[in-house]
Image 1: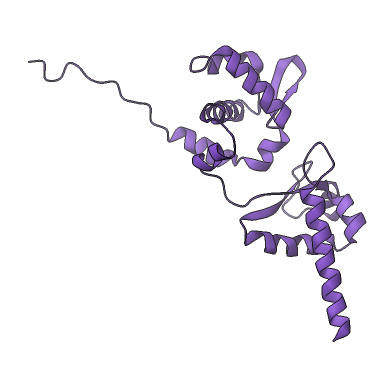
Image 2: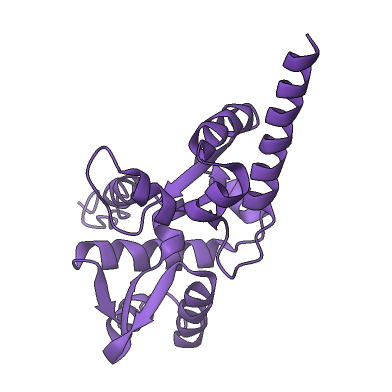
Length: 199
C-alpha cells in the first residue's frame, strides 16, 4: 500500500516537473527539446507527456510535438529527442477570443493574408511582394510594422534576399489547410447592379 502511494507521488512529481518545463521555458522559443525532458524525467518521458496530455485536455490544452524534420508516420526515439515539445490550445480560437487576447482585427487579417500568400507560393515570398499585396487594403507603414512584429514573434522568418518564410510558430499554431479553406470560402461583395429597375 505504502509502495503504491510513493509510486503515485513520484508519478505526480514527474507530471509537475514536465508541466513546469513546458510552461516556464527559459529559452527564446517556448517549450523544450525532447532530450531535455529525457534528462529530467528519464527514458520513459514520452509516457509522462502522454499522461500530462490527458490532464491538459480537460482544460482545452495539449502538448504539441514539433519535429525538426517531418519524418515518417512512426518517428524514432531520436526524432522525439530532437523535437520541440510545448503546450498549446487544443482547439482554434474564435476571432472574439483572438481580439480578447490582445490582437487587433487588422493584425489578424494581415497575418492570415500573408500566410495564405506564402502557402500558395511554395512556402516563401519576397517582402516586397507581401507589402505590395497588402498595401491595397492597409497603409504601407502598418504592413511593414506588422511583418516585423510577426518575424519577432516567430510567425515568419526573414531569410536571404529579403525572402519571407513561414516561422516555427505558424507551424505550431496555424492549421494550413483550415486557413486556406477559410480564405477560399470568403465571398467578395457583389457589385450592385444599378441597371435594374431603370425602365
